[in-house]
Structure formats: structure tokens, C-alpha cells
Length: 160
Image (cartoon, rainbow, N blue to C red):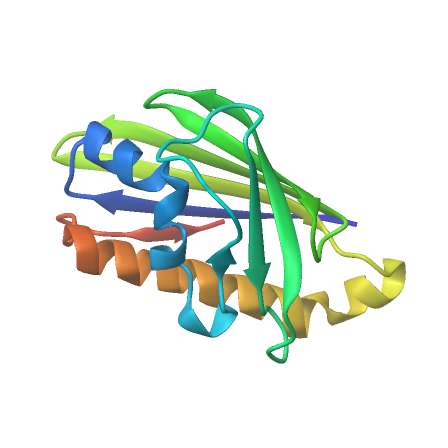
């Protein structure tokens, strides 16, 4: 089964500020929960581009380290970028990041499509292990972005 998760956040910053921060691989660690043990392995450029491979070490479950490699497959400056897992814990991981200028700030919208390994066993653990962990990660990102950039008037996090 392929699952889908959508998250949105409004921030009181310009489209350029949002793009500059979120499209820089070097800021990934800042928006990832500390317990994930997230570290980029090797050199990484300031800005992403199509074809960029980013290699990480993460500890998503029980503090067990694993390698994760994503490829930036699409980039449209100031509009969106897409990362796809090439090596890691998921069978499929496709993450679309959209940015839209709105009055007084920017709307960021994420769509994640993913499939777990291990067939029916993976689907069995999804609701009580994987989904809560993904919700924690996105909640942390929401809080961190708010701490860094402030609260958008009538701030909202939309789950769908």
C-alpha cells in the first residue's frame, strides 16, 4: 500500500527567505528532531539542484543508525522541489515541497507518498509505529519553523 501525508504551514516571511532556508540541504538538521540523530555524510552544497544525491545517517527507530540517501529529482526555483529516497528505510519515499507567496508571508505545502518494506507486516505497523513517528517529525518541523521565523497571523497547520 502507498500512503500519503499532506502538511501545510504559513510563515510570516518572504517567498525568497523561505526558499533560501528550506532549499538548503545544510538546514535539514535544524528542522529534524534531535532524537533522529540526523547527520549529512560528506560534502553538501548550499543549494539543491536536480540530480543532487544527499547522504545521511539517521536513527529513526530505537536509536539504530542507518544510511539514507535521497536524490533531488526536480527543482523549480521559488516554487517547489522533490526529493526521492534511493537508499533507506522505505520501499518508496517521494516528498514534494511547494512554496507559494500569500499576503503577509508564504504558504509551504508538503506531500509525502511512501510505501513501507515488508509487505503486509509493514502495513500492520504503519498506524502505531510509522505514522506517529512521521507526525512527530512534521510537528517538530512546524514548531522549529515557527520559532525561527515567527507566527503567521491566523497561523494554521493543515492535516489532510
